[in-house]
Length: 90
Image (cartoon, rainbow, N blue to C red):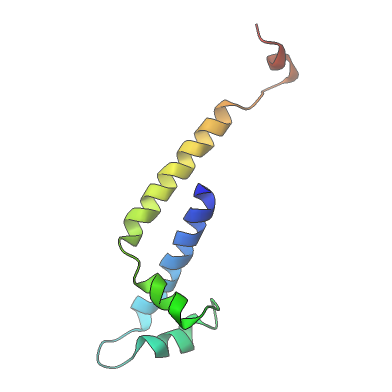
């Protein structure tokens, strides 16, 4: 689950980066940025787009998901059987 959450958060970060690059207050609207720059690359509905750009503390959530994924990777690496003799113990 952590890896799926991390991928989703990184996806949201890419969408937010596109918005930061192309949105100019008093010149453009979020709908125009979504229609012209985001939707062709990452197809999604406009309400989903608004939900993504309004996510609180996205960078903090990404860091937390990365820590969880790394901890899960370490735990699974510790449980790997190195060879068949490890199955019989000492």
